[in-house]
Image (cartoon, rainbow, N blue to C red):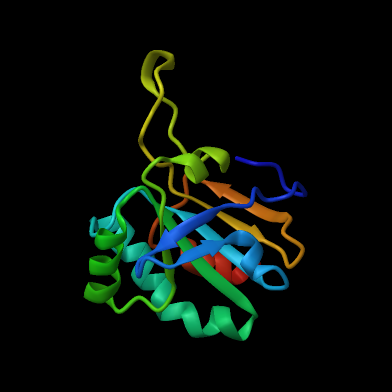
Length: 149
């Protein structure tokens, strides 16, 4: 995990509609940046739906939610539509952002891994990492992050 108090790496990724988003676009707002393994799986669906259900409270607290996985833009669109997700899902098929945020599971025998570690960062209004959580529980993570705000 990246250290609390360090500058969050900026990035630009496509969302579920093919629109580009950069972390710097959200300067002045708190950002819940969560990394998850795969669209439409049980744990990832539970996590996303809990973020969805709590989304009005995140917005009341001035925070935005950004989900990141290695799935495609089209997969993210299906995931958003199937579950009525009101927040942005970002596609990182090359694992560049996932790697920059140290959100990959360690590989076996020192080999590189392509498995995403379910992890969540709270990034403050200035673009600094305020909180960092690795190996989070999918269904509990949204309420945990709301509590951190």
